[in-house]
Length: 188
Image (cartoon, rainbow, N blue to C red; front, side, top):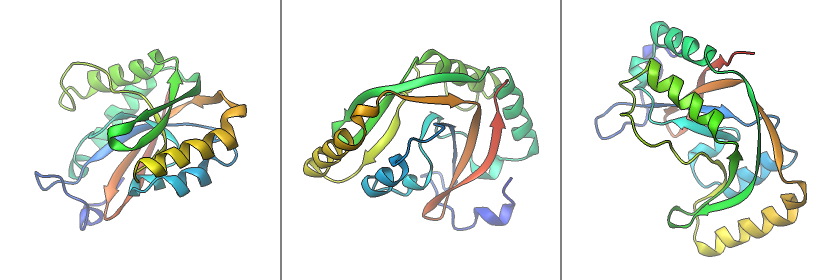
């Protein structure tokens, strides 16, 4: 849990507050994927290991305290750990993001439902996010095409990747990077 001093220098949103996010780590990370991401993600978020984001923004960093973490632990404990695959290579062309689609999506929806039930102030009821595992981000069309070619050459024959989701990780954007604040387990 961060102390109040750790929020100094944090990247602030338009309202002047630093924010946090919740992710489901993708584990085990397939051999070579971490280095691929370091080469092809041109954003401070590259420091966050391979994951699927389930709530961002979550809460302002200054609001994270033991009571929030207790609520988060209780919410996560309502979600059973789950296995999933990621094999469909997709893109958000307007934002230069290459990603893998996790399947099935329903367990991720259950995670979001548990977070929304425990923290109704976080996000209004509505659609689920597009669940994805970012492989490459930033750069122009040529760089995205090169990243796609590199990914296909190095990894396509190994798809689908198989992952086990057994927790949520809470991250904060601090300074020019991201820092993990907590690991919160799902039910076994």
